[in-house]
Length: 337
Image (cartoon, rainbow, N blue to C red; front, side, top):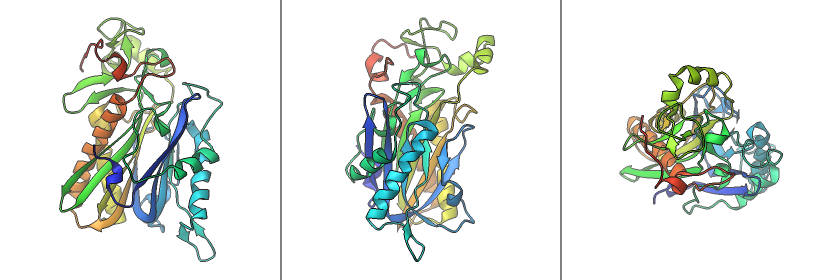
């Protein structure tokens, strides 16, 4: 298996509370990396994204936090900053080094214990656990409380998690991704166009609601009178967040373009994607080691994001009363869109 940590200089660490079903994941770039961001969802929860855009002073960041806990989970950034400061890593202001750590959250408070959220200590623990080995996937880190297929609420949803993927593009150039999948919509295997997780129903078809082994197909539900009505009550509690990294030498403008192109991986594997009910956000990192064409890097960034999303879904296991793809795949009717 290839992962985002195949890129030299990238480390990933998880920390989680398995009882409360929440956690966080940190991607460390201790030597600094040029970074960009693409934020398409209508309900984001983020920190330090403005400085990643072009025409801003700071060029390099030192870590990215992906976390559960909704806006409360942003407290975990303090633990990441504490760890980096202790290791004398950060933007040199002259008097002190200030770690630059953008972050994005998912809303996982509807699963597990909503009073427990990632905080300073969990963020610090994630950094202590960071390694350049392939990271664990599924129900770990920020994926601990992730779920998908929520048009009928949590009762008809499925468990998902966190996944990673990477590809070598030739000449030693690598692009990798790590994604947390907490989408409002359904997850599609982009290679086959088959639904692999999403809102469930008792029988085939969009209006047979319940906890059954069939897919309702969120896109089909949205075309019905019932779907239009229920959408008015849907919660702003969904998002896909992730990081794309490469060792290609890219400018800040090019890194932002890679983030934008990488966001297409969400639309390849989530139906529907980038809704007003999702906070879909993709960060991009460049460690500046190998010459490469930004168009090639960006094109394959979308593929590794889509693959990471599929892996996050397939490698998750049931939790909090929700089944996962792996739990019911033999019984599941693959009612494709």
